[in-house]
Amino acid sequence: MEHTLPNWTRIEGVIIAEHLDPKVVADFITKTKVVATIDWYDRTPNLMGLTLAEEGGRLAAVNDANEIAPVVEIEDFALDFANEFNAEVMIDEVSADALPEDAEVGSDAPELAEEPMKIVELVKIPESSIPLAAALLGIDVASVELDNGWQALAYDAQYAQNVGDFGEFPRVTLMASGDEFFASLAVDDDDETETIYNWSMSTRTLAAGHSGDKIAAEAEELVGATSDLRRIAEAVPGADVAAAEGTAQLRGSRAVASFVRALGVPSQIATYLVEDEPADDIPGLEMHYARGISNAIGRSVDRILLEPESASNPVWETYHKVAVEQPSIVRVIASVEAAIGATLVVNAFRSAKPRSGWVKLGGVVGSMMLIDSVAEVMLSKYLIERTKKRRGE
Image: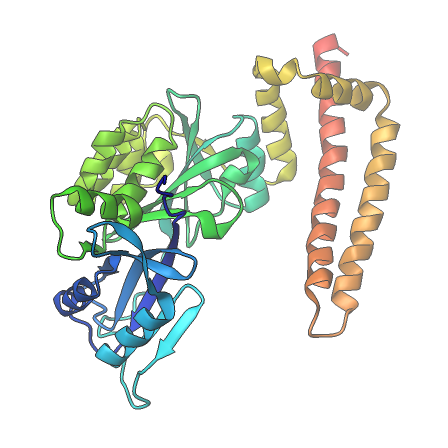
């Protein structure tokens, strides 16, 4: 009879207690034979993360046949863990709370002020979309084209602005702030499918005491952080995946420089992430400033006309013809769009609190329609003026 391999699903967990010693936690998990990766910051000994794998409500563990199989019930593992460490344990949708009511679980680390992070998005995006994206998001974006045809988009912000939404998936994002450096991979709009690797955290993969053998390798592939690093690198065409995996042992600026190089990204991006230097002072990076929609449309159209694959697009050719020869059609369409958008925005503001999700969504869509209607008129005027200049009028 053919042996059917389990259909594993990775799940995440978190442990909260007054104090957690990684070695003691690792010893406990090893005794349960559950395959897991634990991660932690030294500055927050009250918190620890878990990465596990499950099938049908049972966690991956090493069985008596020395194979990784679905053995331990998630509920049983969470409850035993909570009782052992007087902790609150949350694993996927399962929780167990044995944390004393008077427990003090505050971090000893000083509270850090929220400062902008250095963020770089690696994404396949038309160069003509970058100026408009910068204007719409209200951030200055520096860009450099990669050898694989992707763009590296660099900007300062407190969180990722997803400039790459104007491009295609997958999207790899690098973020640095102080001692923190991590990378993430988004393959779609679902946050649950995002893969993240953090060089600033300590990690340890546990496989029932196995080390350096087949079981340990399977455990690393199943729940290990290094496999996350590999998945991120594999998403970038032309990346040196082996070199990227090798950065797992590095820290600080060495990790940044080595990982950026492994992805085939120019060294200017590593300089931006590591050095306290504005992007517009780094040679080789092209700046796209948030100067307003009208300026952005002009810069974007200029780039579209310089991109053969965009200029020859039948949709663009049709729009260009209508905007130049029959601008009244564009104005009528924009007016209708603006009226609908304004109605949605007004309804959202006038609705009684608490507003439903649909009302809020209507307000957002209405705002976007208003912006788009203005952009349509501006783009039409710009194309007319540009055509007149070409004709010498």
